[in-house]
Length: 394
Ligand code: PLP
Image 1 (cartoon, helix red, strand yellow):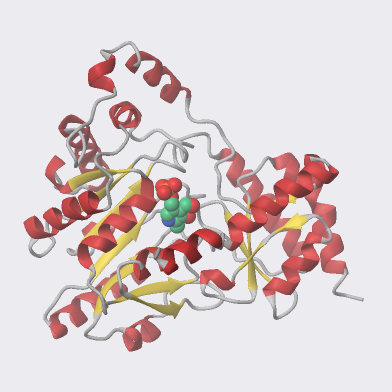
Image 2: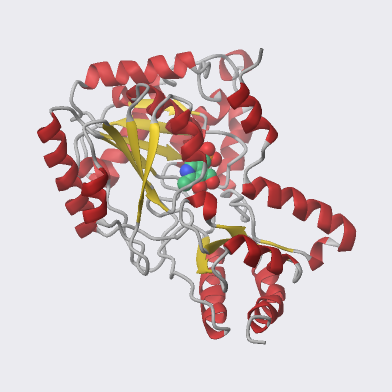
């Protein structure tokens, strides 16, 4: 017999992927320019030219060494360069031995969760959350406990969080800037949340791990800053990825930072290495590991996302929608114009607008619009958004 749970996961695509596939079919039918696909979070700007230049230079090196396996936790020199960059940027004191290189944030998350969870444990997700978290958590035999953020500013609801924590709570995933709201958790709220976790961990006599999922750290607008969680909470695992900042999502490169101040650091780091081994990751892609030291601190040109953010926010507000103003990432979270977001998205499809309903994000009644598209697509889609809003006035 096969594993029925795995069969179900394979047979049923995520709502986002389902919509993306529908979009491909629809584009073939009526022409790509007539379908306004806002389904996927695939970066729409090219990588910085330094990426291509560095890769070209790397390809002149000895191919046997270049394409060979690295240490399971990643090349020591690459990890040292990342540690140095983190220390310079965030005033920390981390070393290469705190880092474990991965195949992107998804791998960072599955490895981290596998390392800290046992069956029956509970993991708190602040809703709305990236739907794959549920898959990653439940695979370990642990249970998801969803705690809704405050409607309006989408900051954590600390009172609700405190009520949700039990002696079985082993971890909390924090994603800021957030997919799907674009919200950055304020420093004040980070401090309060960390104080709460510290207090409850002490009360229960075991750490609650803070898993910081940070693929959007560099994608912030105006003068907003994203607090660095290891500076606020010792038992932190940072799951970082270069997918979005460098527009390299298909190349699969990221890392886990285990805070050197974490309780039982050595055992925790060993559990990370063991989880990577058990999941068969072997090592992260070597060519892209060697790229990283040259491009630390670089980003793709993110200005188009800001242009898109302002345009969509302004126009949708003008048409009568209620979007959440994003501080970062490239998503706009908008209240559906009827209680059932799925019905709303079905109606949007008749205007060739592909929007993702929020139910799988654990926060029904909203839609997610991925604005990592060309500004021209947004401009052309505006009459459709207007007509969709108008269709609810009649
Ligand atoms: N976490 C969040 C919140 C995401 O939005 C994504 C991708 O969209 C990931 C993790 C996975 O990113 P990666 O491509 O680095 O695996």
